[in-house]
Image 1 (cartoon, rainbow, N blue to C red):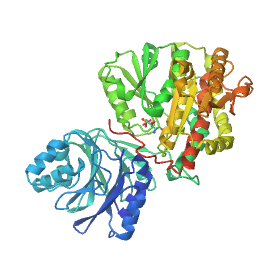
Image 2: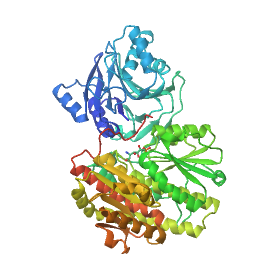
Image 3: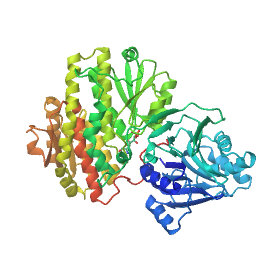
Image 4: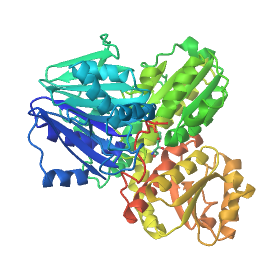
Amino acid sequence: MCGIVGYVGQRSALDVVMGGLRRLEYRGYDSGGVALVGDGTIMSAKKAGKLVNLDAELAARPLPHSHTGIGHTRWATHGAPNDVNAHPHLDAAERVAVVHNGIIENFAALRAELEAAGHELVSETDTETVAHLLHDELARTPDLSDAVRAVCRRLEGAFTLVICDAAQPDVVVGARRNSPLVVGRGQGENFLGSDVAAFIEYTRDAVELGQDQVVTITPDAIVVTDFFGAPAVTKEYHVDWDVSAAEKGGFEWFMLKEIDEQPQAVADTLLGRHTIDGQLQLDEMRLSDGELRDVDKVIIVAAGTSFYAGMTAKYAIEHWTRIPCEVELASEFRYRDPILDRTTLVLTISQSGETMDTLMAIRYARQQRARVLSICNTNGSTIPRESDAVIYTHAGPEVAVASTKGFLAQVVACYLLALYIAQVKGTKYGDEIATIIAELEKTPAGIQRMLDEGDQVRKLAAELAGSRSILFLGRHVGYPVALEGALKLKELAYIHAEGFAAGELKHGPIALIEEGVPVFVIVPPKARDQLQEKIVSNIQEIRARGARTIVLAEDGDMDVVPFADHLIRLPKVPTLLQPLVATVPLQIFACELAGQLGHDVDQPRNLAKSVTVE
Ligand code: M6R
């Protein structure tokens, strides 16, 4: 939520900052703004709405050239998304400019204190209090970094702050607590960004910041301290993707590009994780085999699409490892007093590595002495840093707000973990594991086939664009696929959509079926004959009540043919792997239908890519 950029160097700061903001716009698009330092003054521009509005503002009223600047693209928390509440926020003397991501929880008290002392605040934001506090602090201590540290010590809640000062033209200061900020190391220039996409065009060398740290960048130095000024230990890393991965590459939407990248995302996530004879090797995992052998309960904690990846993984974990597994929404987890101990493995799943609910669940779990293993797609993010162990998905940067390749890569990474535990615990023979690995290795081809056959789904999207409500049914691992299909449609097309476990139909949801309502049904492979037969009966039941059935069934399943108004064929894969192919047409459908309705597919209304507030 909110994208932040900072720059000092020799280039045009405006170009660097605006380029960075464009690549971070997926984080929030309620408003955009920049501030540049020049000639003892701050020059700023800000505008409500997407960055195109800021572009227009800058074209109408250009800012003078500068080598130092900061920028912000907002997902509104405090105050309506209008021009006044847009960042940056300045103090009354217009000496400092502040951009902020997060929520300052004690801002009401700070604001009251400032107003009592005669400050006039013009916006409804929590951020503006920081600019005014800095104004007062700079009267006592002229150094911006010292002033930022002093102010940070007074703030409660989650925040990333990036600040520039008219009196210190070659300095940008950043600070973070519970909210992301990374540093880009250049030559004669340095960068700050909410994530590396902000500066990937200029450098792939990044510095990870820890909790409660302040970073001061100048063209030639990066200095990191804690909130009290003590030097901090940082970790440097090299980003393994380049700017082309963060651009659309000829696709109309990032989402289409990311759907198309799924065979590669799955292949890359499998790459190097097993030997030629199917032995799992998870080299980067920081839990020992002994620790894994002791695990007697797995609790998967995640949000949104990652939660559905977790629901899918539960079936594999229990089946392959025989360890009981629960799946819990991150936002609920720590409020229900869960029973955790040293032998509980809390498995968190997050594409961004910054989801606040998931991060809070991790902290809670670790306080309760559980071990935390995270599946994550973002190197250098907070969640892997705060976990005992991590398995990275190698899906590459995911920019569209709707998660696609992130989901498939998460399912694969969870399966690798499940197989690894099975190998360590001996709940599966080596040859059984090798067979499953061989099947997993075939899935990129199956996903590619679903992409190649996408036209039938596109046609269907055009036909169904006028629907008021669309339902999704599945059983077993088809159930989370149904939920994911419905979520994609809700968030992109703003159409009412629900996913149900098909067996639950008769317990209520069947009342929603009326003439013409489209219902997607994910049919389990015929190898699971009981489940397959039951869902075929479900299809007949809804069709008899007027539903328009869109059936996803494997090649050769002829039982469904008489009851399918539309039939989408899936490659024959083992049951547990079916989500990896069955999700793809649902993603294409939602993306296409949203496009038909004229929606911004990559930046759906009210949403942001990383939910960094609770
Ligand atoms: O970055 P995370 O995986 O932790 O994000 C979790 C959810 O916010 C995310 O999956 C969200 O539901 C997506 N918009 C779904 O497409």
